[in-house]
Amino acid sequence: EAGVVQSPRYKIIEKKQPVAFWCNPISGHNTLYWYRQNLGQGPELLIRYENEEAVDDSQLPKDRFSAERLKGVDSTLKIQPAELGDSAVYLCASSGGGNYGYTFGSGTRLTVV
Amino acid sequence: AQSVTQLGSHVSVSEGALVLLRCNYSSSVPPYLFWYVQYPNQGLQLLLKYTTGATLVKGINGFEAEFKKSETSFHLTKPSAHMSDAAEYFCAVTGAGTALIFGKGTTLSVSS
Image 1: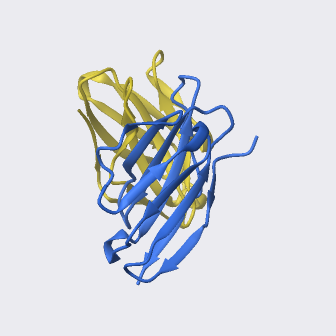
Image 2 (image 1 turned 120 degrees about the vertical axis):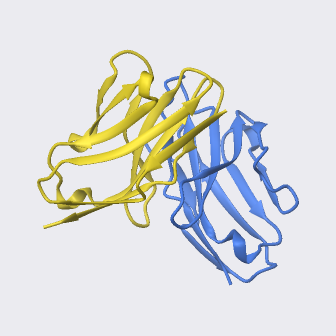
């Protein structure tokens, strides 16, 4: 079984530029999460999807961040425009079956210069 | 509301020594508790989890943790450290209908 797939693995952009991250969850997992992990910190939730519905986006900075999960499978997280403080690792995770088994992808390391 | 506190941002042990990483949680609902490990430039790997049932949970790589409700703790232990255990460890909590909430992490260093 393939795990959670994220791309790209690394991204370097200049500030004020847009950037997008892609996540393909484990097949059959209805719940998808985007987390942000700053250097030396634990991951922090940005948004949680149940199928295609965003059920918790209270921590998503909506002025510059957006996310979508079309057809309840793949998801895209976008930042526009990026700021220096957005440099972090963006992790995607999925879960399903009610056993609280979260599986994380390898993450996208974003560097804003 | 839920939260996790990991005591000690950095723990150093000698190879073969006991590993003890401390985690205390706060939760208004019955908690589900997790320990994850993260190696440099990699994602999070589940070590073990407590949902219900036996309070002593065994995980991968010889790690185990005990859920103590009276102490609101879920400390991670391993009897004998190995060099390959050096990594970042995260404790996390969730409950019904909520997402995982992580602690700030503990860096484990193992010296020979």
